[in-house]
Length: 51
Image: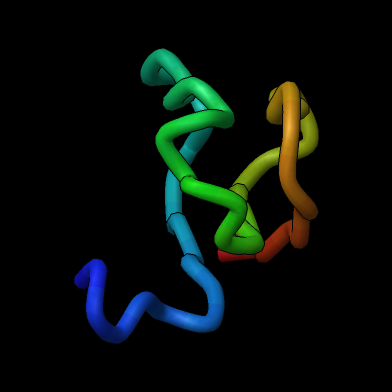
């Protein structure tokens, strides 16, 4: 991954597990896809999905 890092990361979650520390993203943009309105990630962009 060091030679060819991803352009971004998308994480699909309910948000109830502990969030990763921001520095682990290594400056790669992160989009959290969350299936509820109850949780707000401490960093990154958020999109809500309704199921």
